[in-house]
Image 1 (cartoon, rainbow, N blue to C red):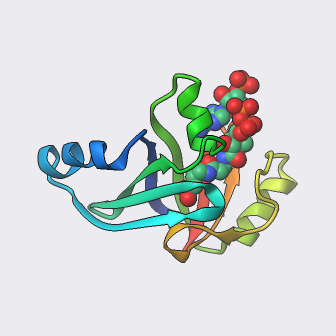
Image 2 (cartoon, rainbow, N blue to C red):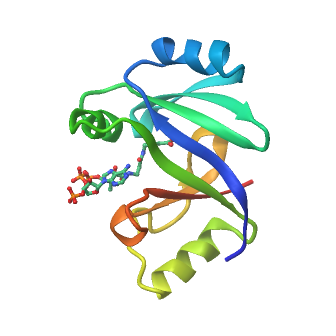
Image 3 (cartoon, rainbow, N blue to C red):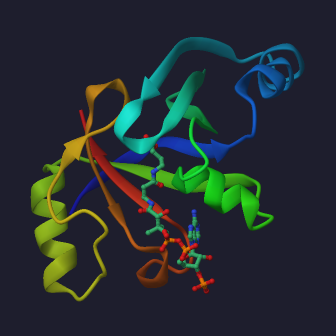
Length: 134
Ligand code: CMX
């Protein structure tokens, strides 16, 4: 696959409202969108940092994967999303063929209506990895 850039860093926070002042007022980043992704049970806030985005992730349900992750004492960077130039479906097929454990067997729609798919952290050096395409 050909990766063009890191599309975004997903950062899990208990509350977007409480986290935003740090990103906006201390780091000076612009929050340009807040969006709920119902099927992932998260609210997201997007900030632009050069070509890379920061995606703040707030759980919207106790059984959200983000809530489960926070409940285990984790915090901070939850996943890294790479933009693939030749399509998520092709990248998934390549990963599958090379024995990488897939979370999503096929691309699906994520935040900002991007085609996305996740790779399991047990196959990716412990970093939950998202592939996406524009
Ligand atoms: N980064 C690294 N490792 C992680 C992880 C993360 N974000 N989340 C879970 N893990 C690890 C756990 O530590 C655990 O490891 P151990 O077995 O060594 O303890 C292992 O993965 C299994 O974790 P789990 O707590 O049992 O959780 P689940 O199996 O229920 O789910 C995962 C884990 C990654 C499959 C699930 O979180 C998932 O499907 N993620 C993809 C979707 C997602 O993250 N959506 C939210 C963002 C949506 C968006 O960006 O729009």
